[in-house]
Image (cartoon, rainbow, N blue to C red; front, top):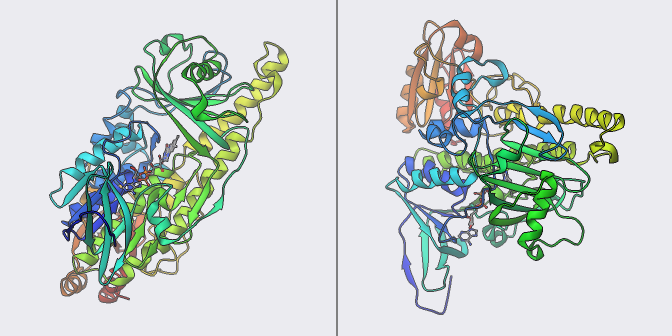
Length: 558
Ligand SMILES: Cc1cc2nc3c(=O)[nH]c(=O)nc-3n(C[C@H](O)[C@H](O)[C@H](O)COP(=O)(O)OP(=O)(O)OC[C@H]3O[C@@H](n4cnc5c(N)ncnc54)[C@H](O)[C@@H]3O)c2cc1C
């Protein structure tokens, strides 16, 4: 695929992943756990240290738990007792308008065991900067013998060749080149995705939306200030929003001590690269409502207002995941979380095919399942951006007068509603479904309506397996196998022999788990349920009679 300079060629892996962001690293972990030889190319020689994403959703934490490192992630970021409140102010040192109080990491671990209904879960969300999560993901991926991380290597060309793929790569400084031959390649290479461009796919949807806030060019600083908490007169929060007519912004606490990020929307004529540090600090001080010098650690610029999904997620042996196929306004905190779930979905399927038990329909189901979720989630993020960003602060909002007080009450009501709308989203995080997937065996029941703030646990095939805590204190998810699991629900276990026999005949790894008690049987509304490796209900029923055809279909042999 390349010409010119000396080339050292190697053919050494099953999968090449392009990009070591959250999507690429999580995919490497899913593949590495299953022994798949995987190379991850990452053009950056050292990881980015700008803390972009702040929110790891509960479903993502459940996947980290499945892979055994949720506790490592929960230990990162804010101190264990730091509250994760979201609070709204005119300026950070002035009037508080609204607050949504949320638990600290320590409390989250305890509370989750007592919750039911919408928050019936193995894990609650965790508020932590992406840089810390990526540190854990990188560590986990690097520890897997079949995974090779190659920082400082840029993919320059990717395409199919005969029965596999070829990926050209060069050292970021141009000093070396190589061609990797593999069975599959995955572009997890971010919003500008060179892989997506090489495949010729466009991102389709909405861009260039203008809002008073969260609709336009954004500018961010990562800064250090050991004094900031001393000047904030309000209770601590994880995220602080400033609502005024001079300078709107949001600020997240990075380590609960002295590091923060501040994001603001640029006004017409302001160019991020032309903003001197003094002006960047002044922007922050306007939102703070006080003079306080801070030390700028890093700067960044990004765009708010995208609702974009790629036309296709796959071309033959080349797949795309993460920001490469969906771009969000970060309201709701869904971009990285959706990227991780792409990796979870694709990981077990690729490994199943490479390990010989998965059929071709598994790989075709990736786009069908994940594109629908990308459209759903980007749509939800857009409604959050409208809710927070279309409200224009009234002129009297900061006045020390009855009119000012009334305006603050009205804004407070809005943000008290908005905070719960945007940040209490069990429906989004647990309620994503794969109803139109060819590898799900529908049972004729209808799933509950899709709502962002409510999740109704259901074992209707195509959705997340309903969670419960077992009598021994473990999460049901801790009892599931790495690949498929057949749940036998209720006091007297239904016969699992036909499933075991069919799985053995097709070499499909299947664990069988008996969950006694009426609670489990009632929750699943069936005696048996087949759970996929990504904890999605693939089938449920009361008799194992169709075991062979169920397994054939759910393992992609249509
Ligand atoms: C301000 C802000 C706040 C956010 N907050 C949240 C939040 O709270 N929750 C949330 O879920 N999401 C949030 N996001 C979104 C989140 O940061 C992204 O969705 C996430 O990083 C996507 O992960 P990814 O792995 O798909 O892509 P990326 O993180 O972009 O990783 C792609 C990687 O590919 C590498 N790469 C690119 N080209 C090549 C090449 N040719 N060869 C080799 N490597 C290459 C890049 O260097 C990069 O490391 C936020 C984003 C912003 C900007």
